[in-house]
Image 1 (cartoon, rainbow, N blue to C red):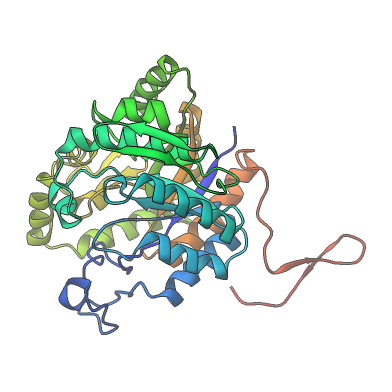
Image 2: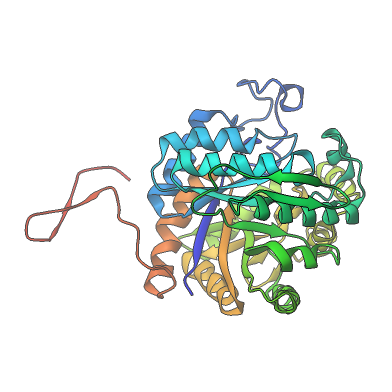
Length: 393
């Protein structure tokens, strides 16, 4: 079982601080290049292309692109980036409640043909009613998961290539189909920590994603979903969503983490915690419980730092340490059954290189990756010996 490494596309903005995602004039609506916060980078296509090409060059398999009213549309952004990359896959997040399942199935099929099979799907049911209402969705938490269950039943049925009928509480479809089903079928990634989410994952998902909790808590989730999937006669694989701060030494990595905290005022943290505390997401509440809103004792497990979650919703933990430390923790999660690691860091361009040049070779040396990605500076020479082409680091 090899490790699959994925990176993240910050389509809501990037920067050197943890308070960068909404830091644009008019809350990000105008996407002004004159940012009110120092070091903030607008998510324009040129910058996102840099990250995507770096991820591909460094050996990441795919990039996750988020969904929400605070970021650019994931489908449109990634299909544009596909024209600037060759092998990189795109893990496109989308909300099943705001689009027809038959249309989503058709979009996925078209996407696969345009990109020659580089689509992965991240189904985001949604844990924030305020955000959902912006899209015109007024269902409560559990009914949203019931709708996702039906949605994925329709999508998989339509992908069969034959007219598909479905009569459910949320969807009624007569003769739904895609003229040309996607080839290959996109793998479906899905996360959810509530009792309503588990059965949906067991019935429909290829990869169940959890946010970065300590290993014992991750093991409990894996055991839970695996047991539910066995009852459905299915096998589910597992992934984890984490940030990374990897450096040549542990001291340097922790200094970087502490610098990120230095940029956060008590008022900023308090406001973020109040907003995040209103979330209906069980996974979000589990993230908040890891630190309780306090800056003290943020290393909640060896090399697992909860500082990001003081102000950021969703994934709130980071692997922090030397390249070897971070590789150790990835190996530990992998031993529990985690195959897919969806990673990110601030800023995303630089942190991709820190991880790609430091941790990936270590993982390859441990036999967790099929091979070390070829460096663009290395070209085969006559007789098979590598030729180093001049270039700066």
